[in-house]
Image (cartoon, rainbow, N blue to C red; front, side, top):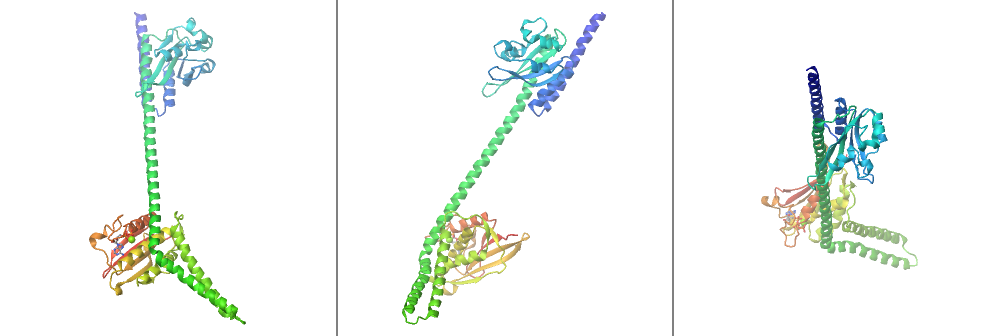
Amino acid sequence: MQEQREAHEAILDRLNRRLRTLSQCTNTLLQAESEQELLQSVCEILVAGGEVQLAWIGYCEDDAERTVRPVAQAGSGLDYLERVQTSWGEMEPGQGPPGVAARTGKACWVDDIRTDPRFSRWRVAALARGYASCIAVPLIAHSKQWGAVNLRATLNLYSAERNAFDESAIQHYSGLATSVVHAVTALRGDLAENLAHGVTALRARAERRQAAEALHQAREELAHVTRVTTLGELAASIAHEINQPLAAIIADANACLHWLEADRPDLDSVREALAAVVKDGERAGEVITRIRALLSRSSVAHGPCDLAEVIRDVLLLVGPELERHRTVLQISLATDLPPVMGDRVQLQQVLLNLLLNAAEAVRNVPPERRRLLVRSAVEQRDDRAWAVVAVEDAGVGFREEQAARLFEAFYTTKPGGLGMGLSISRSIMDGHRGRLWATANPGHGATFHFALPGMR
Ligand SMILES: Nc1ncnc2c1ncn2[C@@H]1O[C@H](COP(=O)(O)OP(=O)(O)OP(=O)(O)O)[C@@H](O)[C@H]1O
Ligand SMILES: [Mg+2]
């Protein structure tokens, strides 16, 4: 009776420990954040449970030796793992419990290390560390999608008692192994999902950036083409603008030659004429420089810009065109305009578009209304100074229902119009963190304004 009770109590005690071990392992499986942490905790919990001396988990590698590489271990005699070589190949080092379990997918155990011939290779080292029996339980998972093995490992336990791994122990550890496999694949699945998600997000970002770059490129091309077209339209006026100083230069130069032929050349007049030649030459050169800048394909990088210069450059180009149509141009510039960050050529293009639109708006109105006013002013907004430039005309103006469409691409009311001028100008302003808008004048015509944040 007494013996029977003691045997029962021993079984109960063992079951209790296993239950405790199992619940601790389950907690770990649920909470572990990395595979390594999970495997290491399982080994430690199993050793702490008192049933085993050594617990280790080995991953099966696909190297030539088919090594079972320990990745987590706990217990006494850890140097055992450094001494012995374990394999899951068909050759002799693969005939021990870990090798068999990994190959067959079934638990493999040795009841008595002293006598089992399968363990002869590791016997001396194992006995020296007090191990009497051992078991290896497979940890194998197949990928859901491909059916390929994506986890092949073994959980290896060593006990100081012989016959420690009976039927119930095998069941217990096999059950635990299944949970470990689930936990590992869940962790990896999470990781894979995160990775996949991350990759998708990255790809989407890269694609967005490419699309944005392509759009940017297309805009630049378009802006360039419209600049070229605009200049083409201005060609006649510009040619005149250049021919005038050239004609003056020729006249002055001829006069000089004439004076120099005299016995006593009038050097003062020669000097004066040469100064005029230089001035006219510079004037023609300046126009050509502006045109070349506007014709340049690539825009310059953003840098500090003086809007007064931008206005002056553009007026130099449209001035002759306005004169040709007997349009009066008035200018009212603020002297304290803050410098802005921007691309000078693009800003010139915006102003050029606005001025040409204004010139076109006054083309067919009575002569007294053929006036344009270019204004610049400083405005205080959002805690900083903004440079505001406005082009005001007394032309045909726009109706309220038109107002919303003015900046749409291809919106035009002109027979030969493309309807791109304002749309391009607005995207240029957007690229400068600026604004472009239109207001109807109280009397006649419209005013187009653009505002750029001043540099601090
Ligand atoms: N100053 C203005 N007064 C009245 N309407 C204007 C004025 N500026 C622009 N508009 C209207 O806005 C439309 C669009 O102007 P936008 O500059 O974008 O194109 P467009 O001048 O017609 O052609 P282009 O592409 O050759 O410039 C014009 O067709 C015109 O109806
Ligand atoms: Mg236009």
